[in-house]
Image 1 (tube, helix red, strand yellow):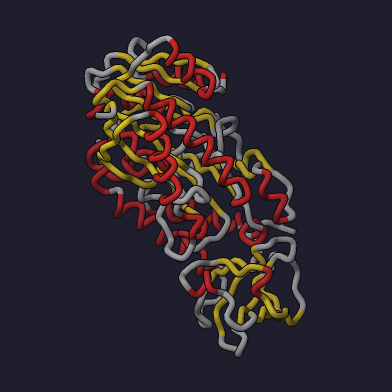
Image 2 (tube, helix red, strand yellow):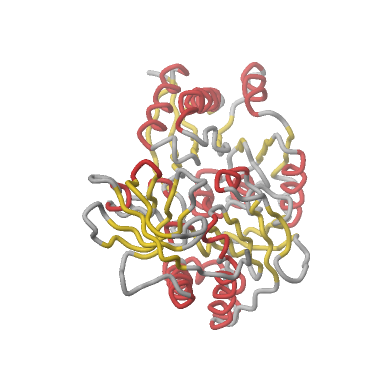
Length: 424
């Protein structure tokens, strides 16, 4: 079926009594076990009506019988059916929100001759799925390039419309999008009955995209990098560690393409070691360091962090600042216990490498590892490492990744800075 269709079927989903709790609390998902029956004819991916057990109209959403998330809701109002006009309104609202919440950032870091150039240079998450009321679609804007990740059948069928509306709204602000790349290559697409897709949408372009964040320049590899190529959600967290790093020796673990390491170096660190298991990531980090003339301060090592940290401890190495930015150790509730063990291990090892009175910046990017469990795991690590912690700052994902209350999956990033002391 064409990726340029909105099909509203003459069909309706009727919930069981007392069900739809997440949706009624503000979320957008209706699960398979919450449904009493489906009436009418439809194809998976079509927009249908959703009714409560007593016939009360709850909204419109697209259905997929291959997914446990049976319906992803698009509208709660009877007079707001899912149309191209609704899609454009959602995209426009998303862009206006980014302009508003990033206004001071734009003024401070993207110093250009006019707003057109500022908006062109701005890199941000433009569409954040459910949190922007466009379920299953993520669109990152890297300067004048868009990268899309589509993970749900309904919005996958209308992704061309969504992208057209993005280009239209951008053009109204003087931003001409020169290329779009698709990174819908995540395995989770198979749960929706979708094949993995990766490649250009439209004309080909150089997939090595130059961006600037916090005054640091990066080459983003939108074709081969992780996820969409760069993790924009940490932009303000990277900024927050700069002051702690001035004149300090820093270790950045799971450095990816060197973003935390380069912010530490830009903040005046005397030396920074960035570590990542990916040889490609380390090469990109070295390239980014040279791009910013920071290659004499920030060096990079390809290694398994779980193996390297004990080796550094045995050698008696100590650092003023240790940064832990690991990938999600769990992508399901079933593996939370195993993930907690991994988080505890790296935090305990990281703390042991911090000088007395130094700092540990640590985070989790899994929404299954909730805030309470993450902080408890760090506390357990501190106890086993015989360290005392003073919390300096607790942060979350950047505001261009808004958290939708009632949509638990939209709150995923927890970032904490601690001062670490030997036990008294």
